[in-house]
Length: 338
Image (cartoon, rainbow, N blue to C red):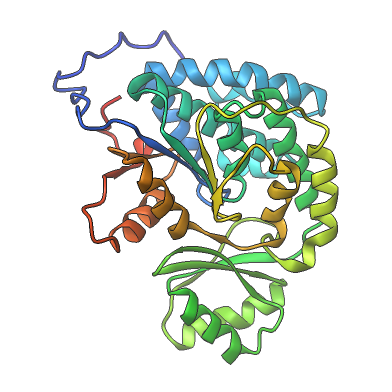
């Protein structure tokens, strides 16, 4: 893939650029965690979507100042250049590199969506995605958000264990853990009625995965070398909160809802402590999705490279009696109307 001048902007309504639906007003932006980050999708979309490419360049100019400050390699020129790194290369790079890439990508995707569809009526942050959501809302500068993302990456190196996704409900996951005798495992994230993530020591997760196989429940170990959303990680959470507390914050441009706090953040919240809660407390996606329906959004957009959060949102919102707004994952949809 070569890095040349971007193609001319496509006008809405042409065969190559579907018209933007008029009813997609008051969007809500969804910021995912670390389990669904595709570098190849990001790079490919940047080459075909001029607005996204511009946003990525602008955001990573600021992210890379923090990368240099923290002794990490620059990311913007590499992601937008002729020889972009693979996801594996980012994962194997210096601690924090992958987290800075994900953070910058989410903020840039948000900016490109905002340029196309206007300021969102609200945002939902899931786990690591809370940092990008708060940055998108202007609570943190891009540089301080990047610093917080790197701080969390460092904290996670002191969080041994792992995370396993189970294709079942929270109640079924609890039953599996009890049957397996996995007393050190906990439900870390509830995505919807058919998908949860459990956290714990690696040996404990192996017991859960064996019990899942016996019950023919799909279990997939996430490719993340750490645990999270586990009550045993209190010391790492304290260290992370102490680091983030040094960064100033501003008034949010739009409401930000937390899947861990289970509510909208307010001006009196100790955001350093609340972000640190993502290390020790579970995240529940469906309740905050139902909360943001109160803004009467015309559409929900995933501000990430994948579609897992969008899929969970569709499943969760389908439980409501009223017709749910559409949920779109722009980078996972080749025909998305930018």
